Amino acid sequence: MKEELNILIQAQYPLIYLVTSEEERAEQAISATAQSLKPQRRVFVWTVTHGIVEYGQPRNVTQHNTVSPEAAIEWIIRQKEPSIFILKDLHPFIDAPATTRSLRDAIASFKGTQKNIILMSPMQQVPIELEKEVVVLDFRLPDMAELNKVLTYHLDQNRGRRLTTEAREKLLRAALGLTKDEAEKVYRKAQVTTGRLTEDEVDIVLSEKKQLIRRNGILEYIEEDETIDAVGGLEELKKWLKQRSNAFTERAREYGLPQPKGMLILGVPGCGKSLIAKTTSRLWGLPLLRLDMGRVYDGSMVGRSEANLRNALKTAESISPAILFIDELDKSFAGSAGSSDSDGGTSSRIFGSFLTWMQDKKSPVFVMATANRVERLPGEFLRKGRFDEIFFVDLPTPEERQDIFNIHLTKRREDISRFDLEQLAKMSDGFSGAEIEQAIVAAMYEAFAQDREFTQLDIIAALKATLPLSRTMQEQVTALRDWARQRARPAASSVAEYQRMEF
Image 1 (cartoon, rainbow, N blue to C red):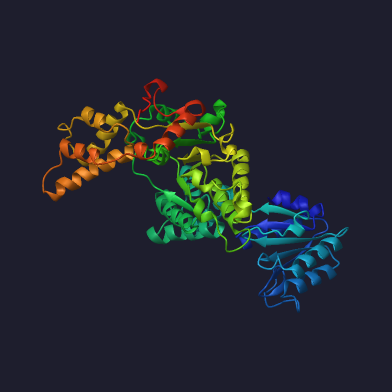
Image 2 (cartoon, rainbow, N blue to C red):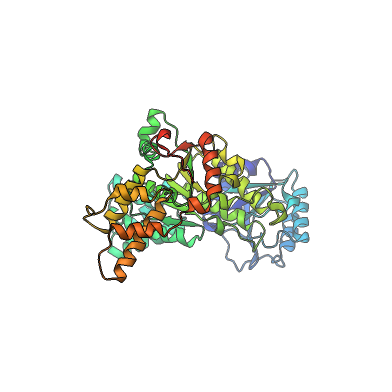
């Protein structure tokens, strides 16, 4: 970013939009750039609370009558010497006609001069009048080199305690994805908690990092206790995932393998799509971040939803390698095609931004998405190149149902020899994995109410009392199967093992 900023300033780009919440760090970078130029540039900072102040001067040294955006821009236009003007948090005012016009006047007056305006804000909001004039830059979160400076400072404060190279790397990687201020606070917390800062405090750093991600409100840090063995059947899908368990290592790069992009799991509701996504996190040893698309959309301010998505994706990239989990993708982007009539095109812009990110991303963020209603998905999602593979999870076969009964009964009782799993599999024809689990739970409630142990007959009675989704929504399930037969890879071990239901 610093190199790009340097080039834009020297090339006399009049208006630069810097998207960041790290004001101090960004100001330091801009000041360093200004000092490296020939001739050097003065740097001025504007805020709505203090007006224009030269960078490095006390805030009470203000230029008179520059608190309003229009007055500040007018003052900027009058300046003659080479300078960089940072306008902080102008986005609430930028759509006002007077502010927009003032910026356009400034841009016109800057031709042939060595003056630049940098709009610094945590969210991007560019009015249509300025779209052709502005260049947007994202100020990236600190890398390991910058975090290393923060860690070194805290180690020096800790009586010069030294860390091994491996221990230092663990602490630095644990803090990736945090701002500089957040990293400083996390390292202080670890030091205060134990009185020292060593590799043993990685868990403290990670726990605080999870809290910071949760406070983001859009990304959720998911910890899954189940292993992939808790998923019944789906052997072909499991094999695919196990083959890629070391895909993000340096050894894989040296071998010449590309980084996996992601996978889309389609299928009947309740057949383990979300569980397979969650258990992959443990299999691969990567953090699992759930992207809640419902929280992305924010109608309180124009551009807020797009900023939410960008911030969430930047956070996911900053702590990569990681898995980005999007559940029920069909609901998240179902209305993107005609969103201009309902939400002013916000959904379309969100959809376009996400597709572009998926296509162009270089960071090792593996996208795992699930969907139930394939007909609702925009065709662009299904094009080759978006995902490495599209899997279809069908209703479990008799053998898979036996496996599912075995998993859920073993979770609840050490000895399950009294259950006839083959009979239960036959009785549960057309049931999903979730429906099988609920039948066992219903049988246990029945027996618990009678103060006795639940039996085979209790489970059979619960199965008979349940009408599975494959029957209540037969047309939808049949249509999904027909679509997937030629367009998706079966998650079961063999296509021949799929027993198409006759309802």
